[in-house]
Length: 184
Image (tube, rainbow, N blue to C red; front, side, top):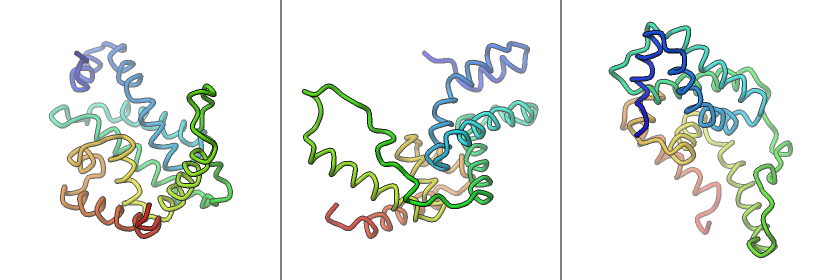
């Protein structure tokens, strides 16, 4: 069974540097993925990931161990992403390459060409639709469906009431249905 985040933080506060390293190893990939999906820039996603952990270290004395650590950590990352997004130029849809995440597979396992084209088209439309969502809706969708946060964890990560999270997700899905068309 994995050691709890709160236990690792307690161990780090008591002088065990390996405890914080385990937290970093546990959450580097999810934080990076969140930042990359939000910012669409690998270098900025790395910066957000590093800055997130740096901020945890600098505020370690104020970190409350009676609340879950994961939503707190993601709240820092989301706030950093929002700050960078406000400062950065908007990403043009033409700058996105829908083949970035496509991995090569064996010929006998590969879907038919038309299936891949349909998937790529749908993925490109979904990216465009997500980009058109307001930032709070976009963040809620990413945390729920990409990072697989519970509604309660999203509420904690975004510092929002639970019903507001439900409303954001419902409205985001409604807007995505309209943008993508009900047949999809």
